[in-house]
Structure formats: structure tokens, C-alpha cells
Length: 155
Image (cartoon, rainbow, N blue to C red; front, side, top):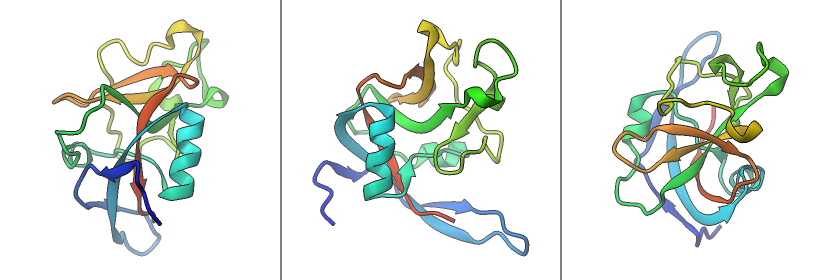
């Protein structure tokens, strides 16, 4: 399968997956896709061509991203699930789920920018990551058009 709009943005990462008897390690690769899509469209694209939108469970995952790719903000696989909101606004970390699992972070890792998530503009329910040395996350309206990061590999 040709991925003419993407290139690898990180080295293989090791993700430990839970199982009743052991935690097998798998190789996980991140891909930057230079195509402008909404978050739902990016999720569909990643699921059709890779595994899903990118999941980051540690700073080690973030550190595997290549620093020299050109994007300002890119969609990642984090979204705010209103079905688990415990307050009027979806700014609690327990309501944010990873696309690949439908669950919160297994490690508790978060990299939100100061003030985020803030549910600004009454509908910022999808997450993106800024391309800088800190790789902080922000919340954004899911219908905004952005480039995105996919992952390949699963448990």
C-alpha cells in the first residue's frame, strides 16, 4: 500500500499491552500525514491506512517523534467523551479518551498546554499537538481542518 502523503515521524516505539498473563511488547510507529482533514476524517483515514490516530502514553513516545517535520498543530487520537463528563464542561482529564482504545491513559500521562483543555468556543472536544520542543496538547473543535499523526501497530 502506498502512503504518498505520509512519512515516518518517529522510530519504532515499544508499547506494553496489558494481558492476564504477561505484557507483550510490540513495535509502534508514528506517521505524519500531510493532508488537511477534520478530526473524524483523520481518524477514518488512519484506521483505513494504519491502525488509528496517534496515542501517547509516555514522554518516551513523544520523544520518538522526528523534530524536523513541518506542521504547527496536528491531530492526535485524543477526544473528549461527553458521556463521562462529571461537570458542565468537559475539561476534566477523566473524560478524555484515546481513539485506539476508547479509554483514558493507562499510564496517567498527559501533556496539556497551560489552560487546556478549556472547552473553548463551546465545543473543543478533539485534541491536537503543537510541533515544538514541548509537544504540548490543546483542545480544538473537531471540525477544524488540520494535518495529523497516525500510528501503526496494536496489541
